Length: 334
Image (cartoon, rainbow, N blue to C red; front, top):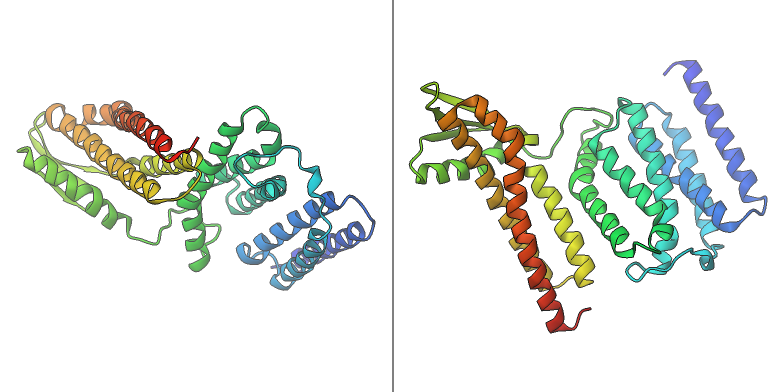
């Protein structure tokens, strides 16, 4: 870090501290003051643990100072100013939604700006969650069930997609890197949970198919060659399964309003059905290449593959919806 950059960081830090001190001693609205302290506190966490470009002792000073002021302003909150009550989330929880939404918004903007200045899929997930939280009190008046589902759905996506990557980057000190990161070997996962089951299915049907890592080898009758196709993580269907899982979790929570054995059983069945649907989708894609060549395989992959998976999931969703409604009537859940 150059001396000019360090000087700018010092000026910014003490300017923010001065503004915080002034606002916290000026007697302004307690709820507004809490929001300001909450935003500065959340941003100081980002500076302290996610950005090595900012001097650590300066960000830590901001973190401790804003944390103390946040604690003090928390004791003066007026919960009567909540715009709308929710029949799903607790009123005290709803009160904090706008503050959490604003903090998430600025966290994403800051992170993406100092990373590569491009909005990633993970950033988009957090942004949608941030806007849903911020506008919850307004939208819940007319679209209560819908906005509850959106918040749960994108929170589940965040927990499944974004959070593991973030933890991995923190552990490996790779925050800001744009390359794909994971705690596990993606080739091993693809071969174990997609390649080998796919080979087993097609081999049982009488086809000659092999797998190695993320490569699937099959006989191309069109060119009379043994051809390999690479299954990238983005094309493996794992993302679709994760999205389906997030949607199913959100739907079950909204409909059941509790976590019980029924919830776990339906979730496990949903995961298994989506997994089988994905294997079936990949089998059709490989067979299209086997009979008609790589060009047709690519077309089926880009056009029909998602439809096949979606159709299977649609059938499951219709069946499970009837099952859940019947079970809710049995246990007295409205």
